[in-house]
Amino acid sequence: MITVQRENLKVISGEETLSLYQWNTGKARHYFCSTCGIDTLHQRRMDENAFCVNVFCVHGIDPEKIPIRHVDGKSRSVV
Image (tube, rainbow, N blue to C red; front, side):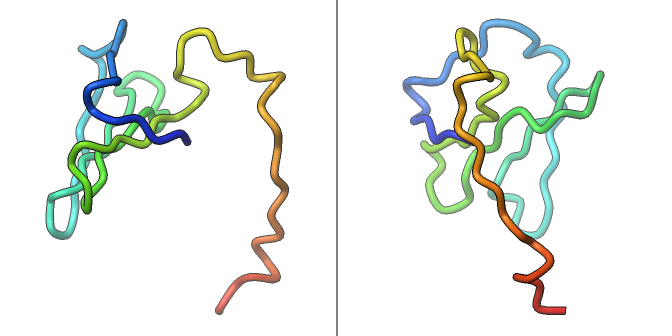
């Protein structure tokens, strides 16, 4: 995910297929593709002008050039 300010965010295609999901306070707005279910972007609860955008949904991004950070979630579990 990358953070983009509202004034720099432009959906160039597929906006009609986005579905909104909200919970708890209802302030955060999570948008998913209603066709495939991918998490595309969400509006932050604490800063309504900031959106986290799935980098794979950004036009012109080469996925092969995105660095991968491996995380060992099992050893970080609190359960």
